[in-house]
Image 1 (cartoon, rainbow, N blue to C red):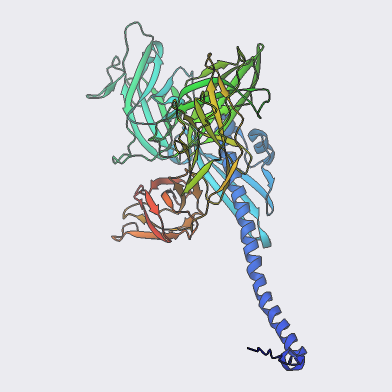
Image 2 (image 1 turned 180 degrees about the vertical axis):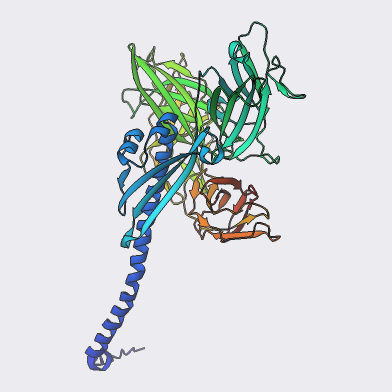
Amino acid sequence: MKVRIRHRRRQDVHLGDHGFTLVELLITIIAAGLFFAALVPVFLMATQQSSTDRARILATNTVQSAIERLRDLPYGDLLATDWADPAQAAAVLGQDLHWKGPASDLSVVVATHPEGAASGSEDYLIATVTAAWVGEGGAPHSTSMKTAIYRQGLGTETLVLVVYPAPSGFITDTPVTVSAQLNAADAAQTARIDFTVYANNGTQIEEWSVYNPDTGSAPAGAELAAHNAGDPIWYFDHPWQALTLDGQELADGRYSFVAKTVPIQPADPGDPVPPSEWASKEYVLDRDVPGRPVILACQAGMQEPSPGSIPQPFVYLNWELDPNVSDLARFEIGRTGTLNGSALPEKIVSLPNWALEYVDRDVVEGATYTYKVIGQDIQGQRGLWSEESAITLAGASADHTPEPPPSGSIAYAISGRSVTCSWAASLSAPAVDAYRLYRQGADGVRLLVQTVPVELGTTDPGALTSTDIWVEYGATYTYFVTAVSLDVDGLQWESASTSGVPVRVPEPPKVGMRVDVQVQPGAAVPRSARLMIHSLDTGDLIPANPWDYPTIDPGSSNVNKNTWVTGDILYPGAYEVIAIFYAQDNTVLSTSTSERIDVSSPDTPVHVPYSGPG
């Protein structure tokens, strides 16, 4: 069969028939120029808004810093300082009240005024810190915060006020005992002690009196002070429950307890004797504060940095904490030490909330180290330090060769926010007591995920696994495994690590919330609210911009709803929404928390109730 191949003649292409004319090209260029020129204001507006947001964040942080400094000052300095004078204010605060912000200069103004101007009391004053700056285009901006600061002592100061149990200044459960204590000589001149509890915004929460039974001035049914024979101290005690005047449970936050001694009054009621002594203490009410960690192990060890290298010392720590703490954010490890009689620099290490183990390699032989562990919640409130655990690195008493790490590769499986690694026990290392899985992130820090004990004779490749929980979506981690064996003295010997295995955690599609804040009838109308999204999976706290409520009728029979749509900014998971409500004068009215919600789709509905003070 013959096959004939035809060759088609190439057709000539004439540019004049199929191209653009010069006029068409000019029209296209002009149209495109007009289109992009119309977008310029949009880009300028976005840039201006970004600059304003950065300036507002700096201003808020600066105001908060100034408030914290104010709260640490002696009460007399607060009253004596002319805060309108920038030089005096800067000298007392120990910092300049002028910063260079991301958009422009930022100036801070501090104002204080005794609350007695309105109430006749000199127990506390209100401090207002305002940061002002000029934004893009000369537009003025400002942000302010207000706080109440209480007098911390008066008179002869023989009056002592304590609240217990309240370790480290935290009230983690109520009732607690509020105790004012006087020596016998002063108590003999005291008819009663008056107590008052204030919220951080100056709102009076509760007041009561405890009477001296020896003065005969106590009314029927009154609380009486206690005094044991031979004890030089009188105790004016009262059990305090964290409730409002109408019986509602108080929100967590800062509260001040004030006690005043009222002397025995003269027979003439027209010439009363004022309180002679005054005492105040501030406590943080936080009923979900982390408890006290328990250190389970504090052991010395040696590791080969690389196969055949000289072993280097380390200290291994392991601890546990009450798993019921829902808002645990991180752990801190505190370390002190001595070497040859001289103190070593103190060291603080911050670890994520899932970490229950730590290997300290920044150590030297011959030194004695003391460790303690503390938990911190998402609000920044610390719990209790653990009991201290000390260890001296005496080095190895005999030569010991670390067992080799696994020779095979590390397999892994990803499920949501967790990565499960598995590896085979080394057949050539039957004396391995445990394996350790480490992970290294983009910051180069290598964290211990878990120590996996090995049962005698374990060689099944699928038998050794460890799960790294709460990894970040979109992040890349490198995992390593080492082998750990114990010598006759109980010293840990750790091998060099295996080759690292990189793992990238894929990102799922993001989701969002539609948050309804419901203001109940009869409640005081909040001026604004600040919402924070708390991830129950990772412990992260995501602040949201506050918004202003519209004016509503508090007596309305209809429930008022204010809706905030986050947009698709969240990864699927479990969350709760925390709302802080502010009054018209920018003081805190109350806080409220939504129920746990599993967010798995856009506009997942979330309801935050508000029934603050009326």
